[in-house]
Amino acid sequence: MALQPGEGSAPAAGPLVDTFGRIADDLRVSVTDKCNFRCTYCMPAEGLPWLPKDEVLRFEEITRLAGIFVGLGVKEIKLTGGEPTVRRELPKLVGMLRQAHPDLAMSMTTNGYLLDRLAGPLAEAGLDRVTVSCDSLMRHRFAEMTRRDALDQVLAGLRAAEEAGLTPIKLNCVVIAGTNQDEVVDLARFARESGYEVRFIEYMPLDAEQHWERAKVVPSAEILETIDQVFPLIADGDGSEPATTFRFADGEHGAIGVIASVTEPFCDTCNRLRITADGQMRACLFAMQEADLRTPLRDGTPDEGIVRIIRDAVWAKWEGHKINHPDFRRPERSMSMIGG
Ligand code: SAM
Figure (cartoon, rainbow, N blue to C red):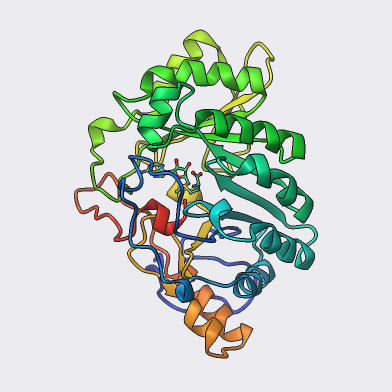
């Protein structure tokens, strides 16, 4: 009979595995809960109560944790937030991580607003590539969705990232019915012109204001169909990413990705772990439980003790987030506090 999540004991060696046999090897580290945007689907206009500074992990603590996770088989670290670029001296952290792990894949998800000045220093410090969020190519709509009139600044950030070699660049675009759904073909055209992979993300019930409703979710299948009618697509990708990727049938460069977290959850192949800015590990975006890593980091617990906590928490990972089940409950933290 199959094990229940957390039943029995986590293996003491080998990769980070759960009771369903999934191996976690992709780590997202939130470096701050603060953000300089106020995207309507994420954060209220007035912001959120920010974490007290002493609760946020220090660079040395993040570097130590990263070392522990790499030792446990993590192959890729993605820095996120909040908005990672608002964390002071971010290139210093990237440099510390790079020095400790010369071969580790290291990327960052950002709104791009500060990339015009930070792309160079981040690339020099050892960052490999960026994913930039951009939900609209229309100035007024971009301002409406992010509550910041910043499209030009983000486009300048994208150019700076390209010049600095933070490539291949991916663009994240949350699609909301009745808001930017009519732009998917224009965004696909942008993928062809820029060579970026434009990834359409389904709107998830993780907005702080709890305005999410199912009617606002545009199914990925519908997005693909709309694009395919104008720019025929061919399935691509190795299935190891949450995004299903497609290239253009006419051979034009650029690519399209869809992240169908709501209509086609990919829990059975999920390989992600997240650490919040205050040092709590989450095995699922929608998890109700977190494993506190900050306390052991600060109370003198040796690495082996932290490894045990991580292994047990991964072992206890649930089968899936049940977003389509009547029993679904939202986690207490919203997206910016988790680290998307
Ligand atoms: N500030 C950075 C950025 O804008 O990319 C990193 C953090 S942000 C929380 C990470 C990603 O989560 C962004 O692409 C954002 O659009 C997405 N996101 C935020 N709230 C979401 C929601 N309710 N549903 C789907 N995606 C969401």
